[in-house]
Amino acid sequence: MAAIIVQVVKNLGLWHDDSMREAVLFIVFAISVIAADAPKVKSESVRVIPAREVSPTGEVLEMLVRGSDDRWHVREEKLPFTGKVVDKVFGREHETSYLKGLRHGLYVIIHRNGVTAAQGLFLKGKRVKHREWDMQGGQIELDAWNFDGTPKKPAPKSLKRKF
Image 1: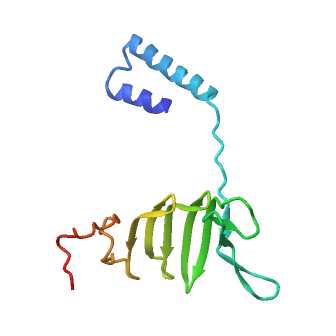
Image 2 (image 1 turned 90 degrees about the horizontal axis):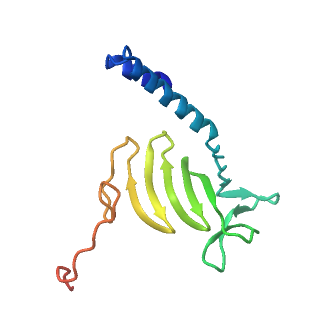
């Protein structure tokens, strides 16, 4: 950071001015002191679980179950799940984020060839964006979603025909 500021002042031809050089060095020193005193932010680790696992008896168990509170919980846990669920079905990888038992955040599905198959966004359990692509990466036109991922508006009732 300091090197960039000094380089900019030199490029502007102001480095030879003593007062400008002193001002730049003071600013760099002040930024360094402030940055050194700034609290270090710990990045929270995200809990990642598989979508299902196989029991010792060979039974396939879904890891997330819907609780009586209508939120998703990890099997045999009381608190709603927060984290990411990863899955692989028919060669396609899925990753979905949850917050307090509701799908929340980005989700992505990957074709087995590595091309994105679908992606979107959930906010507090409601899907608000969704897009899909074919195996070659061409975007697929969807009935309910625009190409930018936003939902299409339903036709006004006055335009709907009654059959």
